Structures are given as C-alpha cells and as structure tokens.
Length: 127
Image 1 (spheres, helix red, strand yellow):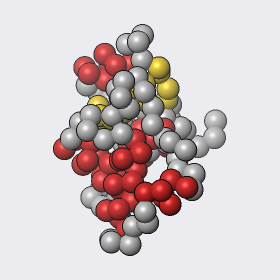
Image 2 (image 1 turned 60 degrees about the vertical axis):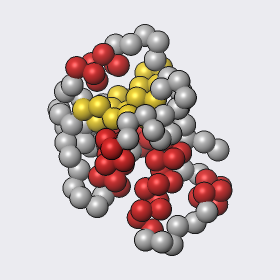
Image 3 (image 1 turned 120 degrees about the vertical axis):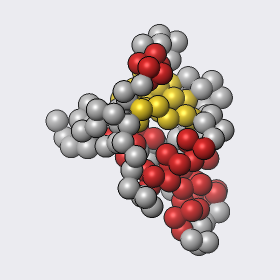
C-alpha cells in the first residue's frame, strides 16, 4: 500500500489553528518532516518522507522499508504540518512533495490550481 499522491495539493485542515506556516518544535515528527521537505523540495515522495522520518526517529532500530509499509501508514493528510502548523503539501506528477506555508503566494496559487486534485488535511477533532 502506498501513501503517495499525484498532482495533488493537501491544504491545511479546516480546524488548523495556524494562520501562517509555523515552525514545529525541534525533534517532533512535524519538525523532521518539514526539515526534509525544506532541504529538498520535490526530492521525496510521501512514502520516502514517512520512511525517512521513521529511520531518523528510531535511532538505528529502523525496520526494513517493506516491513514498515506492510503495516498501514497514515497518509500526509494526517501530518501535523497540515493539521496544526499551517503548511500545505503539494505532490507533483511524479508524487514528489514540497511544503508551502498557508500565508504564502505559492500556497494560494496551488490552492486555486484547477489541474490539481484538491484535498484538505484531516481534522484534529470531530466536527
């Protein structure tokens, strides 16, 4: 099973408390995801990103990639970046990901792009 999206923009969750792209607290999953995405925009797929964060958090005890994805993994719609920190995630035609702060011109452009599938991040709480 893959978590990759193609030609998709994941906008911030409807209940996201941030009105700008907030830098997450160091050492959190969100911080690791954002560091990787900002260092190398459009270099990693969602699967690559999730596995790399797993490897970095496991301190050398990481399971093999096949074993990691043998268990169900949440897609980036459940990422704390879109749920809490005000970052949208754009997946290009090859599934590679980049992050954009909600208050940026690029975010607005991607949100209005009719060629992209538009989805929202998952809510933090039930409606």
